[in-house]
Length: 173
Image 1 (cartoon, rainbow, N blue to C red):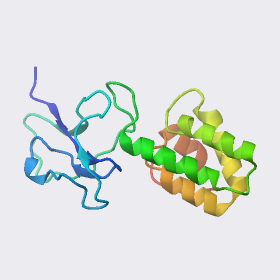
Image 2 (image 1 turned 90 degrees about the horizontal axis):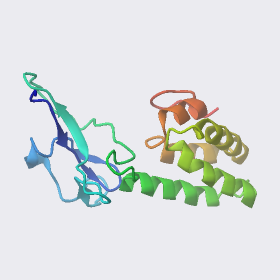
Image 3 (image 1 turned 90 degrees about the vertical axis):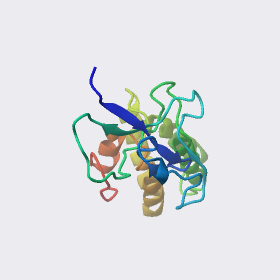
Image 4 (image 1 turned 120 degrees about the horizontal axis):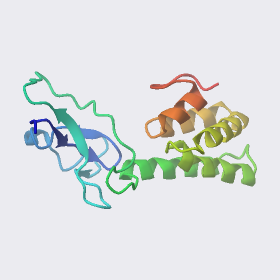
């Protein structure tokens, strides 16, 4: 067995990376986030599995550790959403409720699409298409607001279908 291992990440419940190496560099740990003041966690709040952080490789020395960890939306041990995923889904649902340009049925359809947009499932392309059509009808403010909320938790397939990109952001079309 080699000496490669994953460190434990420390993340605030809103999804800000505090320390991607909380075991190797505990001096960088914080009880609360310096960006939003939220408490930090190192374990899934459902199953207590550690949150995967920086990957350490035996015989590889890194001069600097960055907090550029790509956050997972779901715990790989229990499959439940992390708190930041739940919070962003809730925010997107509340935002959808405010879109008076859409009928009640359209707002409900939009909210229904959100769960499949954050997961990579066979239903994701259908949900992404429905989302794109409804958000286009709601207008640019709706498109921009929902993009800002969802971009960090949307699946790569949904990002590509909705915004036409694999990673990062492109203007909503």
